Image (cartoon, rainbow, N blue to C red):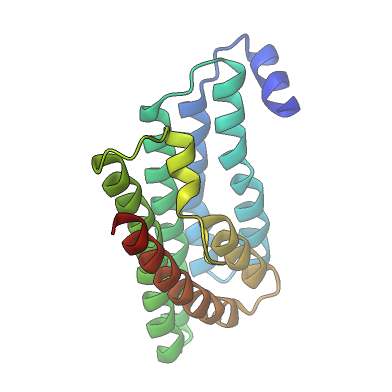
Length: 193
């Protein structure tokens, strides 16, 4: 929150939370290029740096008192794209290394990762549609079960790059993500029954 207050003050409130979100999204395009070209250490560090933007945009929205459903939607949507960019870079790298097993695992991990987030969002929408009286913050926390949250997945991708062994971390994401998908699906089914 301190960084958000400082950014808001320095910019005279001209930097919006959506601008921070967009910069983080755009920054993941060169991150994917760095991964593809085997500059893993730099890419891993940048994933962490731009990962901090995920907390900065929300904190800035609270400082500026402009939190909105539209902003949360934009943030969540760009998170999926950022993750996709990273996987595209990894799949390209693994292809260049002629590591077909890592290509398959990375493609599966990408699919599982996106599905984990999708199931959470659909579960929230289903609960809201079923007239369960909850505000958005309560809904957002309702299906956070499992170790395969977005923040954990991005952290694993970053450290896999920094340690220059991303294929092992991608495999871990596949396992953790699959377990998280099962846990969340079962919980959603229980809540909706």
